[in-house]
Length: 167
Image (cartoon, rainbow, N blue to C red):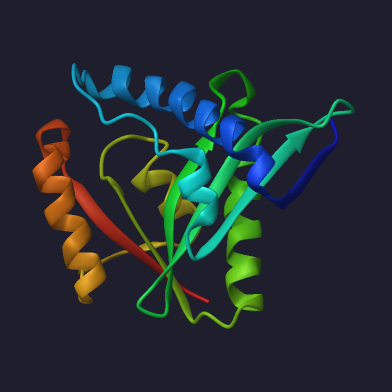
């Protein structure tokens, strides 16, 4: 199997949004969540300050996953990691994390943060295996994320937490 990771461009917006919607269905099932926010608009996601990296698999170069990192108060914040479930368990999530961390270092960031569910195996336990540690939301941006999650009711499906890795 051959994989390539590249920065997403505007033409990738629809595939990014589709990957997120399909991958979120797995999380929604695991959480038993009858209501879930729709995927972010792909064009808006790609247009935000930061970067979106796409992972393409095999000769047909079809995108099977992406990672979205936003610039937040001078910190790289991992906003979304999605891999199509039928392409899961092949190391693609870890490849995307490694690529996101490398790009953050290249851009001069000193740390990366994220918010996730504590008890879903492919959430906090996975990120912990990548070197992320539980941390406290200290910046205004991170506190706003906690408020937005509360407004969306995401905490009713399990404990949410912030994690950070130093680069």
